[in-house]
Amino acid sequence: MLSELLSIFRADNPLHAMGASFKEMLQLTCDMTLSAGGICFGEKTLAEDRTRIYEDDVQVNKLERDIRKKVVAHLSIQGNTSDVPYSLLLMSLVKDVERLGDYAKNLAETVDIRSAPLPKDAIVQELQEIRRGVETSFQVAAEVFESSNRERAIELIHQGRDAAHRCDALVRRISQSGYDASTTTVLVLATRYYKRIGGHVLNVLSSVVMPLHKVDYYDEDILTGV
Image 1 (tube, rainbow, N blue to C red):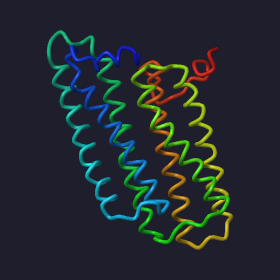
Image 2: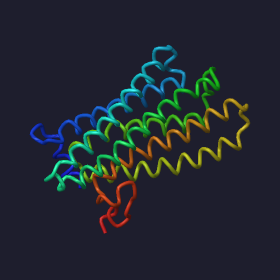
Image 3: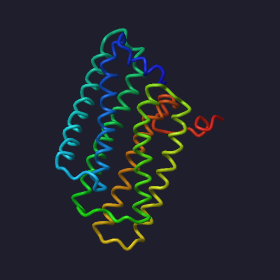
Image 4: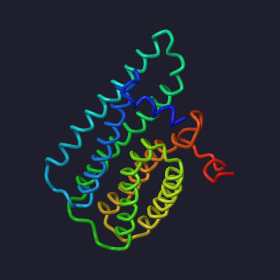
């Protein structure tokens, strides 16, 4: 399915404008996620950093609406029925990317709960490792998507699913820790946000290997090559 979808990124394709908007959404939300992580972990402290995230989210939402409008307009023209599968897939993917922007905002807002730096201990170190894995997958996802690299997509999907399990285990560890209420809240929320960010990135990657009706799901036979 992805190889056909990628054709809309060609300049000679009438759906090219939608493809360009989608790539812009993906890049904006990736930048937002990286910036939000820096804010959450106290690496970025300027008010401008959060302001930029909110401004980028407004742009992401505008791009989503613009893509939807273009899809409806395109499919209303007689003779474009062959583009229905790709248009439906694009509509599904833009919703995932829009949600990535929302979770980036949520992640940045955790600093309002606890402004002091997070402790430097094993639990926070584990969360940092999860963060780096999610960020790396997000950054690589755009390249995998554009190149239709099926093998790399499957590798990232496996890594992302492992990261999701690590998030679940980390929440249990945090619940049994002796942190104060604000620290516990920030760590639990950040862990859940990274799980959801990673999940939506995986949904985009699933379009590389899954047929349209299985996008967002993971057929074990396909992932294992059976």
